[in-house]
Image (cartoon, rainbow over all chains, first blue to last red; front, top):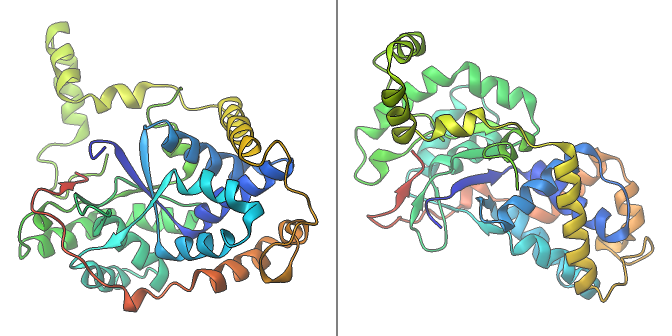
Length: 183
Length: 121
């Protein structure tokens, strides 16, 4: 599993995915954003990519699963996502990212995508962050060289395997599902 | 794939120039060494494919629901019905999600990864 691409859903993409499932279960049409978010979930079920969500999304799922009629929706979502856990240096990197002008929450999501792991603690970081926040995508892209240099400086003082930490690509769900398209 | 943290020693234009000078055998070897090149060339996923995925997920959920879909007047969270929740504006749904999520970033506990943890490089 560890060789698969790994993607962290920001809270809006996580919400679009879950709301997309709710609409599907009720028989409603999906918005285009919900459709791509749900497609990303589907791809995770097909073992093409591992999806991760923050503890906040897990908290929402826990509330929803107390209502028995939503168990099917929660199950369809939960079987395709994993909870990301912050690793050592997560807070430090989030503080550095805030110096680049990212909001508090964006800095935490971006930091988690570099310094985040799974339950077995066998991975370090994500390949992608899935977001619909276009200003975030643009800011991340424009400042990429400066951010990379900042991480490079930080990495010099870190012990293995943290010295191998990388930056994620920040993309919209439809761009991520097109990575290795088909199926 | 995540970008490498170290700067590239040559520009993309220089790499392209070298590729153009390569023999077919060398280009095949390059693709073997960098299979990411194949991924880039694949056509993007279509809306029709995404709709198929959505329908497959709908079937999966309906099976778990005993073929009885959710109804608009089902009780949802915060004393809302499902229909009422889904009809709220995006901003209102975002506010509710925020309250339900109770994300406490500053209190996040940091864990150590295993020494053999696989980086996303």
